[in-house]
Image (cartoon, rainbow, N blue to C red):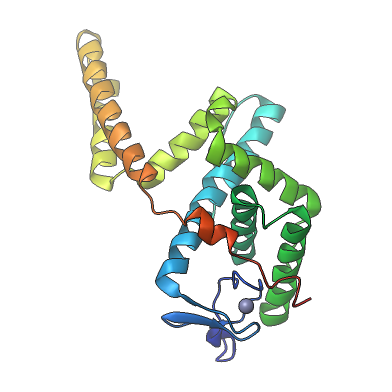
Length: 232
Ligand SMILES: [Zn+2]
């Protein structure tokens, strides 16, 4: 990274959608002049990362696999692209309030792409259809995911579980699974019972932790992107 690039935040400014925030405790945007506390914005970005990965990325791939092969083969993803996180934040804003409509969503993502390309010479493009898919997936994930296909939902929940289950407990479950595999027929049922009981406990604990992940307030999401159209 050159010294000029390292001046900039890798998060989009939630007011004007440029990637020109100066990275410090208070993020101040060189483009629109707005400031916000980094620790506060980090909560929004981390939540966007969670929603993007599990609500959209894994879901999109597994949904396609089910449609094409009628089965799911687990995949993994690198850290999400900053524009994808920005697009998720805009989508969450649109889902949470009246200030962000479809037109503003599209203009915001377009501006993020332009700003990012200028600074980083990257060529990620979020097309209209991808943005529409994201909108549908994120709406379902944050509102009514229980109504989606059971196999799809379980596959996404497994990914969440794998990422958020404490390592020690995950290792314990793997050891127990191994014991079940190696056990004599006569002992198998009892060991499986024990595994199920521990698994249920760990799962409940893990999803409790996930449900407590900090989220940005709807009023905060609804205050974003107010300068996008003015700056174009
Ligand atoms: Zn700005």
